[in-house]
Image (cartoon, rainbow, N blue to C red):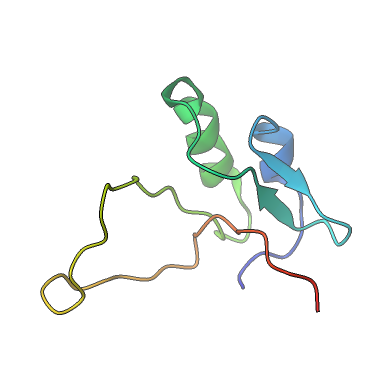
Length: 83
């Protein structure tokens, strides 16, 4: 995980991002409305750890045998179960 817990993303995009008890961002479930795209882009661009990435939603997953997948440290964090 590239996030270092600065919390700037949640300040810039509070409509979709909140901070957990360790100051790591948690994204609201599901896609966000198109009218919030400007705020999302601003949060991604401002991340000092470059830990966020915007992804477009797709109706179906690409076939992993024909479409190479790329990874990046700029993924928006998703909630994870506590251990």
